[in-house]
Image (cartoon, rainbow, N blue to C red):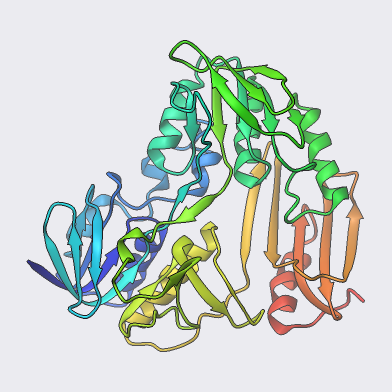
Length: 394
C-alpha cells in the first residue's frame, strides 16, 4: 500500500491546474500523487472540439504541464488506472488492480462521461462521442475522407464540432430535439443568428427530431430520424450531454446527488476530502444556489482553488460561471446564469456578428453574452454579476 500527502483522483484539467498551483506554492517531492484513467497526461479540453479536432493544434501544445515537470517535482503520475472504491474513514482509495493508496487529503476530480444514444447501430464504426483526446483523435482520423457527417445535439460541443466539419468541406447535418440551437442559453433571436450563420456555410439543421437508428455494413452509412427521414453520412458525432463519474463513491460515506455535494469551500461532508470540476456540485455564493458546471473555466478555477486549500488557505470559492466558444470565424463569451431573468437588454446589431445580450433579474445582472464588442463590455460583465448590480444597463 502506497501513501501520499495529497492525492488527486482524476487526470483532467483540475488535476493539471491543481498540480501547477501546488508546484508554484513550493510542493515538495513525494507529496502529490495523481491517479488517472486516461493514458495521457493532463491536457486542455477546449481544443478537442476546436483547434485539435481541426488539425491545427498538436498534442504537445495542449498539455497543461510538460511530462518532465511531474518527474522533476517528484509527482507520482499513474496513468491508465481506475479507482473502484473510496474508504473515507481510513483515507484510502482502492484501485481495480487491487492496490490501495492512502492519503492525508484527497481531491476528487473524476469529471464526467458522455451520455450515449441507445439506438440500433450505435456500435457501428464511425459512430463517435467527443470527450477525451483519444475521442478527438479517432474523429479526426475518421473524417479525413468523410464527405457527409451527422452531429447530434444543439449545444456548444455539437455546434463547435459541426463548424469544424463544415470548415473541412464535409456536408454536415445537425440533428436536435429542440426547435432551435442553444435553447438553454440563447434568446430566439440569438439562435436565429447562429442558425443563419451556420446555414450560410453549408450546415443543415433537422430540428425537433431525434435519431431512431444508425445503419451501415460495419461502418455507419445513414441515420433514420424520428419523422422517418433518412440522412446519409460517413460519420456521426453525438454531443448530447454528460453525467458525473461518481460510481466509486458508493458506500464511501461521501454525499452525492447530481455530482459530489460540496460546500462553498469545495469540501465534501468528510473533512479533508474535496471535489472539483465537472463532478462537483457546489454552493454558488454569488447566485445563492447549488450548481454543477461542465466547462473549462470552472475546472481551471476550482483546481487552483483546491490546490490553495490543500496548501493551507481557507476561503470560499467565489466565481462567476463562464465559458467561451469558437465557431467558424466567430468567438464569443458567456457569463452567469440566465435562469429567472425578467428583462433582456441587447447592444449592437443581432443581424451582425457584433452584439451583446444582457439578462437581468430584479434589476440585477445575472447573465451576459458578448461577441466582438468593446473590451469594456467584457470587463463589466463579470464585475456587474459578481457585485449584483446592473451597471449602466438600465
